[in-house]
Image 1 (cartoon, rainbow, N blue to C red):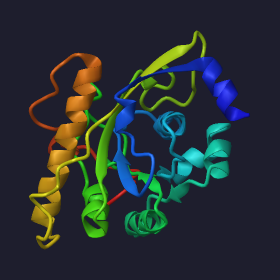
Image 2 (cartoon, helix red, strand yellow; image 1 turned 60 degrees about the vertical axis):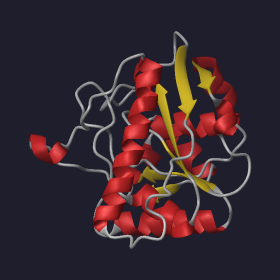
Image 3 (cartoon, rainbow, N blue to C red; image 1 turned 90 degrees about the vertical axis):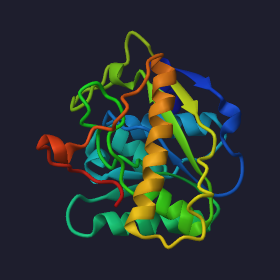
Amino acid sequence: MVLPIWSLGVKYRFHHPERMPQAGAFVLSPNHYSEIDPIVMGVASWHLGRLPRFLAKASLFKIPVAGWFLRRSGQIPVERAGSSSHAAIRAAEELVEKGRMVIVYPEGSLTRDPDLWPMRGKTGAVRIALERGIPVIPAAHWGTQQIMPRYAKKVSFFPRKTVDVIIGEPLDLSAYEGKPLDQATLLAATNDLMNAIAALVGELRDQPPPAERWDPTKHGQKETGRLDG
């Protein structure tokens, strides 16, 4: 019921859809700049042949329509406080063990970059990939801000919006395989992932991404709503 209604308001343009694996476990890591991103990428994944499973902030489950979709499609609510980030990683790993795809937003929350470029990432996505020996695939979307701008509380479907989605090549993690998964290794691999995501966003926007990722801690901003650790 939701998908036909969603399709009335959102048109997808897919770039390199052939890069989406059709079998086996992997981590899909997109950029994140709107509260409605999980639905945008969830529907996109369904169109590309994979049933989406992802970590979503618990607050999203309270949004009309969006919350219903998240609950019905078996997504994982993540609370903000306490050890939720570690619990979320464990839940994602359980999905991986079942050979499923899991969407993990490496930024952990909506980007703070003023121009909506990907910001500094957290290590959860690459940690899962390296620990489990599965691919991590960067992805990006652009146009979602026309449906629901960053920090907005309402959605707009009409006139119909167009969202571009691009799937990247699997991230080359060969330089990190067999190494101790210490913080230095995980941060280096995460930096590679964020560079790959930013390059995909730049391809969709037809602009070069910033040479350096936005770091909220350097701009006096508090990071909230983490989706990984």
